[in-house]
Length: 119
Picture (cartoon, rainbow, N blue to C red):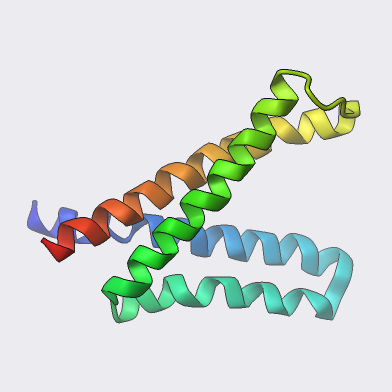
């Protein structure tokens, strides 16, 4: 059981690394060489797996909670029809909504991990 709890605290970092890799592959197919800076987004999460840092962990958690909160507000504004969007954008919003809520949960998980380590 102790081994499972050791590996479960890495799930949010692996999630954001997977999102960065997926984003890279999508952009790399259409843009080519200009997609490589996207891989830089995964470095802090990889660093947290290799050598954990409490300050970086808390900073990553707070940053992604803020970004995810902003994206949740944008998603809700579409649901409430505050801003009118095309049909193609609405189809993307379904997958985007899943991504936004998953990112928010993972960011909260990172904060929970950083707070439990500090006490």
